[in-house]
Image (tube, rainbow, N blue to C red; front, side):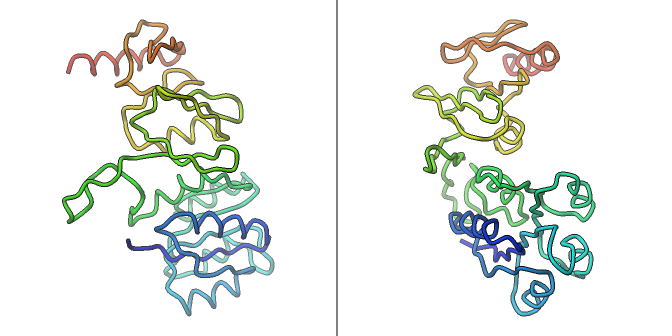
Length: 240
C-alpha cells in the first residue's frame, strides 16, 4: 500500500505526541518527523519528500499560516489549532481540513480520508486487482479501545450532546463525536438526516409516516424542518 509521508509541525509536545500516535494507527500514513517551529519545518521539507503537513497555527517565530504562504509548492495540509477563528483563513489557503484541538481520533480519520491519493477505506473494487476491498467501516473509541463498526450494519445514529449513539441490530455504541462530523464521514449516500438528532440508514427503514420512521423495532421522529426532504427521498427510493 502506498503511504503518505507525514510531517507534524507542532510546538506542544503532548499535541505532537497525539498526532504521531494517530498517524501510527493508520497503515497508509507514516510520520517522518516532528518540527517545533516553521524554520525547522522548512529545512525538513527541503531534505525530505513530504506528502502531508499537520500544521499548527500558533508556532514560535513564524505563524503557521504565514509559513504556509511562504511555501511555493506545499504538500497537502491539515491545519491543527485550538482556535476556531482561524478556520476561514485555513480554507482560503486550500487546506485539506481543519482540526480543532484536542483532536478526536474519529475526526482525525475523517480528515485524512480527504487526502487526494484516496487510499482510505472504501467499498469499491481495488484498482487493477479485480478484488473487492473490505466493506466500509468506522473506527470508534470505546473505553480506550478502537472498535470497528461496518457501515452496512448501522440502523441509525443518534446525537446525545457531545456524544453519538450508533445502533446496529445487535447493539449500540456510545462514542464522543458529533452527528454532523459523522454525517460527513459516512461514505454511503444511503444515510439520511431526518432530525437534528437522528441519521438513519434508508435501506433499513421498515415503514414511515410524515412524522416518524420505523427501523429495527425503533420509532424515530422526523423533524419538522426535515419532513419535505425526507418524504421526497423516501418516495423516490420506494418507487424504484
